[in-house]
Length: 386
Image: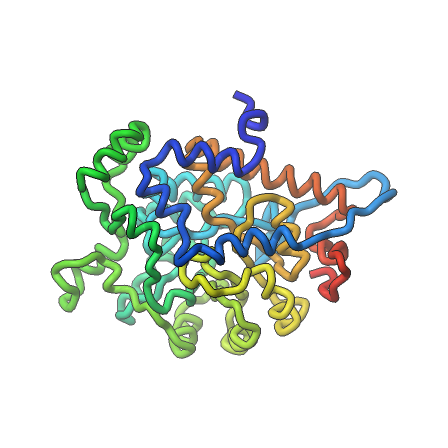
């Protein structure tokens, strides 16, 4: 099968994915919160970033190699964390960790993954990042950091934009709970997706395995309810300081949209800020990530690392994010659409799509490096080369 002919874009993979996984898993992957205005705003804002093609630049070869946090990566994009990734496609965490290691791009594992850090860290090689939803118990926090480090994760990412659970109305309508309930409705949806069902049967019902381990050890944990009880939902700057002191590798804050928070992160010793509106899954009144990047870049200066996500679907979108001030771009949903569509070869195909699209558009723009993308903004902005 020639994947470029059948699935030339992420939209093709997304369409196939919807017909390969149960409805409740699709709603978990595809939904946002509220009216989903932020999800749509991310797309519209990216489409609004215009760039001027170049002419008569002669022969050149674009180079996607991008330095970040002490490493050179093969491209300026990576794999963002998604909780309960294995619900979307059985074995998702392992497949994406292997892809990151093989293609030389970062892979970030969520605290609320369906696999343990000890299982996934070795698969990611030196490309493993660990995303932390902050635990309530400082002893659990200390143990989590120790386990992540021992499993080989280089970078710690603290997610700070989940001060309270969001409603995610589409998920409520789909009767989605964790762990998934065996209702007649869900059983019927599962039967209609036999490949997903058989793979899930082999892998086991998706669970918050890491948190479940700590729940068994916590005498204060309620006897009912899921293991998310153990996660503190609203950290503060003292919590950031404690993590900085407890982690000796690169440390990133994810979920920043305000320039003053980015400035304070620098003062707190944070190594990079991740500009994100959580893909519209937490707050339906936020701005698009790409729209806040210029002000944050102006605040942190030209040399401080900025990571960004938010509705990215193509190589051109990655260049748009970089043109507006990002150094590096992460995608979450996209990799899972690809996995749900075609399994691990789908994720590898998406990596191919993104790189080829970046190169094609860099040739149009006359860019040797993605870092030059800001020079092609139209109308011209004072962003420059990041």
